[in-house]
Image 1 (cartoon, rainbow over the protein chains, first blue to last red):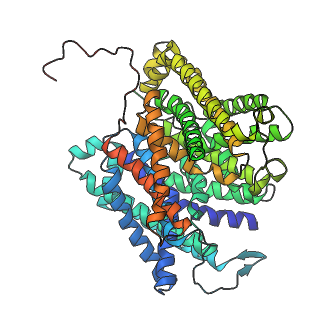
Image 2: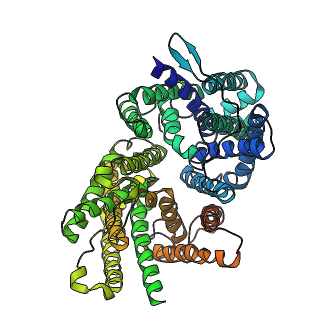
Image 3: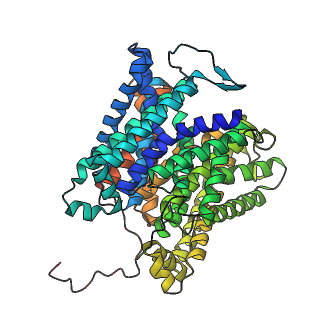
Length: 285
Length: 306
């Protein structure tokens, strides 16, 4: 039971970057390999606000989200927009370059030392023998509300409609007068904010080092692919599955192989159902 | 100084070999390999472990080549029906998993301590003094051999099939090409070359640990191929030299900016490499030279309308 609970919590954590990945994939049609580095950047932004400027974590987290959203827009304008007419493989390679830059800029300023956020330690809640850490509670609350906000944005607002339209058919959307560049900027902003929150929560739950995002990269991709890449709601289900599998498998396999488990699940899903659980089969030509 | 040059040239030949491999997989067949570092590690560790067991250097190298090619074929099988993105994701996940195995299966790989004192092939015959030079010569010969072999493959009907699959797999399969077989073979050929490079890496450094097989190897390889011009093996020689000069040149940045620690200097270098990669993609995506085409002649009668 404890493993199931932990799995759900870590699934919720993975869900945020997985949604971000799916959103940018849907709109721009390429897999953003810098998502891991973005998670790390989010964690460090919160660290800067929290440890260097003394902001309490409740303020530091939204600050990190806002700043990473801005950084994401800058990267979009400076890099991806410049090569928007190239094939998506070029964009993939570029995103790998972006990841490399982000990670090493962080290393440049903060080195490889392990850091922690300055937060009060609280006793875990215990209920019927199930333990729920304070941090886990925060993850549950923050992740679910972030997801609710994204769902609202996608389903109920003009921006969401524009995003879905572009994701369905970019040319048709453009003909209908949807401003592509602006929508893309907003998509990156949302994606940046979600990844930053995930980064902050990972940092809350443990430590900050330049590799924390990378350590989640495979799980995030596995979640997005299982859910049918480009489908944000599928990504949530995929993330929950990945979280559950990773935590329950920890009973049998050493926890150091968490990412290896994701890899195996990913390959199995790709073999059995290449379009993911909720993806539609794309008919080609 | 000569020693320095020899070691630089050895690095360049290793980079060229990896670049050749990526050029087959990505340049020719259009298959993204973001987990290159993992395959490289498989080659290096296979050679190292076998050599430590007393297997001869050439047998161990051959085993490394075969093992890496086989694993490449298996990994590529998982995603071949899908878009390039999925192969990129799978290979990246594979590479991370390899790193986990290397770090945790201490009985086999020595864990984070790595494997040291890997016996070098023919070292007793050549003698320690000339070994570096001999090793470089061996690398250069191998680069030449691989170049010639790959050149034959690229110009063969199979090479055309690879490019056809890259440009449009539906058309290729309509024309009777077995797309799956072409892709698995292309990935395995690339894997074989990576395995060779990995084995040479192990023998050159005589020490390997999991930290050496991180993502930056993959980034270097992509940079080499992109600078050289995707698909062109000749351009790759230029590309590898350029990247190596950049890498080594930026090493001296530290001497001019004394305030930086070694750690900071190395992150700065790596960040500049990433930025360089992006800049090339933006400003010169075709690289320095073009891929091989069947007809070298320019069209005699260019259409005035275009």
